[in-house]
Length: 96
Image 1: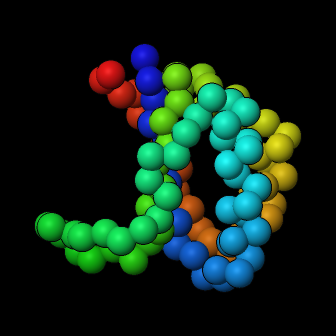
Image 2: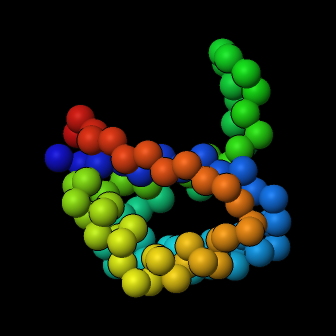
């Protein structure tokens, strides 16, 4: 069953965060993931306005997300992100 990784990031240092962004595509691809949403314009139709950066990725399974997140490569990328953003990572099973 596919799994989606949903990230909300409050970016406080875009220059440093861009260094993190350079690292993640190869790591995500290595673990079978692909970006569905990676920032961009958003429209809030209901509820409070959100200034956070929203990212969504699709993987083959929750286990694939777990392997990517716990990998040495991604743990190194997290260190690059530290101090540049506070983020929330949520993984959910999909229907397709």
